[in-house]
Length: 391
Image (tube, rainbow, N blue to C red; front, side, top):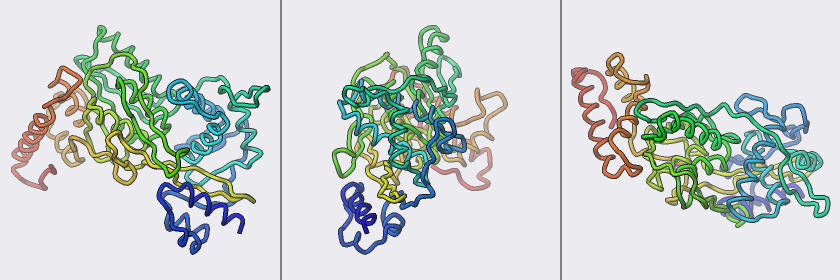
C-alpha cells in the first residue's frame, strides 16, 4: 500500500493533466501507467541500472551510453542554466536533471537505486566541502559526429543535424563560421536538415535556436507545478546571422528537432519544408517509490512560442512536400540538373535564391505557385497517367 500511495501522490500532484482522485483509487499501479497516463510506466526491480564508472549504463540508439556521455550532457545543461536562464538550487537541479535525462534515454523506465544515485552525482559534479552543494561539472570533452555541413552553391550552406547531443550547437556554430570564411565572409542562406532527427537534449535545441535569434521565447515547458514548468529564452544576442533559413522536417523528426523548427518559424526566421513531424513533445521523469519499484510519469509538455502543443500534433510545414511528389520530381529532373539527388533540398535552394533578406515576406505564396506549376508540368509529362500528385 505504501508504494501505491506514493505512486498515487506523485501522479496526483505532478502529472501534466489533472487526474481525478476517484480514478486513482480504482486503478492498480500498473493500470495507472498503461491505461491513462501518456508515455508513463510502472516498473519493477529488473530495470534498475547497475551503476559503473567504466561499463555502459544504458543503450542509446543502439550504442553504449556511459558515464562520460552523461557527464558531457550535464556540463552542457548546467553551463547553459547557470549562465543564461535563472538561479537555481544546485541540489534540486542535479536531482531532477539526472532523472529527466535517464527517463529520456531509456523507454523501459530505467532508474538508479538511492545509493547509486548519490554515487552518480558525485562523479558528475564537484561538491564544495564547506557547503555540500554541487558547484560545477567535472571536466572532460565529448566528441560529436552528428553534425555535417557543406556549401552547396552561391554561398548556401546545407547542414544536417542527425540528433541533438552534447555540444551540437557549438559544433554547428563552428561549422557555420568556417564555411562563412570559406565563402568570402558572407553566406546567402542555410538549409537546416532535421529529417529523421529523433531529438535529444532540450538544452541543445535551445542553443541551436539561439544561434539564429536575437531575442524572445524559444520553448515553454508547461506542467501542473511550477517546478515542472519554465520558459527558455534568448537572453543575449550572438553573432549576427541574418541570412534566410529553410528547415527540413519529416514524419520522423521529433522532440528537440520539433522545438527548433517551431521556434525559428515562430520568430519568422525560417520556413519549414517537408512533412508534418512526429509530435513528441512531453517530459518524463522516473521516481523510485521503494523496494525496487519505480514509476515513469509524464510531468509536462513542450509548447512552441506561438503556444502550440507539440505532443501528438507535431509541426505542420509551411510547404508540404509529400514523398510521392518528391519522388515524381526526382524522376522529372534531367541528368545533372540538380546539385543534389534530393528534390526537397533543390526546392529549398530555389526558395533561398528567391530572397535576399532574412524575412521571406511574400515569398511563400510565390514558392507555392512555382511548386504548383512543377506538379502540373509533371502531370503533363506523364500524360495524366497514374495517381495525381498531392497538394
